[in-house]
Image (cartoon, rainbow, N blue to C red; front, side):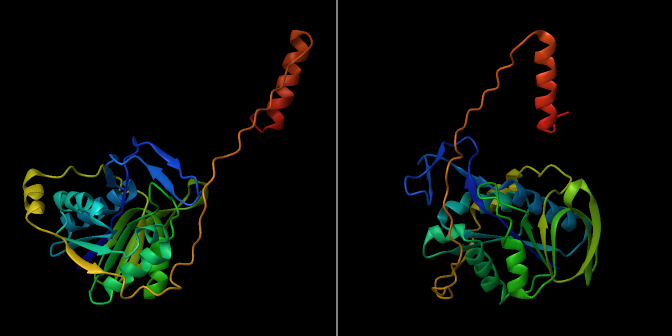
Amino acid sequence: MNILVCVKDVPDPSAFIEIASDNLSFRIESSAPYVMSSLDEQALELALTIKDSCPGVSIHALAIGADRSLPVLRRALGMGADKAILGSLPDLSLYEDPLVVASAIAFWSKTQRYSLYLLGAASDDLMQGQVGPMLAELMGLPCATCVVSVVSIEEEAVRCVREVDGGLRSVLEVDLPAVITVLSSQRTPRYPSLSNMLRAKKMPPERFNFDEALSLDTQRLEMSYHYPAKERNTLVLEGDAASQADRLIEFLRGKGLL
C-alpha cells in the first residue's frame, strides 16, 4: 500500500507577519524560517502509525511550492517517510489558491498508484481547509474530513472517526483509494531520528513542474486581507451599588454570558 502525505511549509509562528499595503498578500520578515504546518505533521504521524502496524506500507511526502519547502520535506523524511517529492509552481502566489494546489497534486498522482491521500484539515497560515475536498473531487475519490483516528484499514476500505459540529464524533467507512483530511493523529508527532536525517541529506526530492499543466483559468480564488475594525464601546455603571449590580447583570445576560 502506498500513502501520499501532502505537507505545506508555513512561516514560523514566532515570525513577524503583517498585511501588505495592497491588501492582497502578507509581508513576512526575510529571516523568518518556514516549518511544516501542524496538521500536516499530524497527517504524517497518522501515516507513520499505519505503517508501523501494516507491513509493506510506503509513505511519500509531497510539497507544492518552491525550494523553501525543502527543509519541510527533509523533516518528513527524518520522521520516517520513504520518499520526498517537490512540485514547483511557475508563480509562488498561486500557492495560496487551493484549486491550484489540488490540481498540482492531482497532476502528480495521475502517474502514481496511491491507496490513501492524507492532508491536514487546514493549513496554519490561511486555514481554508479546501485542498483535500477539491483533490477528492478532481480525482473522483471519496473524502473524509476532520479525521481524528483510523479504526481499521484494509486493502479495500478504511474506517475512521471524524469530528463533526458541536464536538460530536462519527464513524465513517470509505472505499480505497480515498482522501482523508486529518485533524488529529491522537499522538504527538515523532521527532526526526538522526539516522533518518542523515539519509534525508543524501536523498534529494523528486521534482516535477506544474507549469505545463496549469491553464490560465485554473486560478479562480481571489482573496484580500484586512485588519478588523477597531471599536471601543464603554458602558459606565451609574447609581448606587445595587443599581450598578442590576445593570451589570442585565448587560451580561444580554451578551449571553449568564
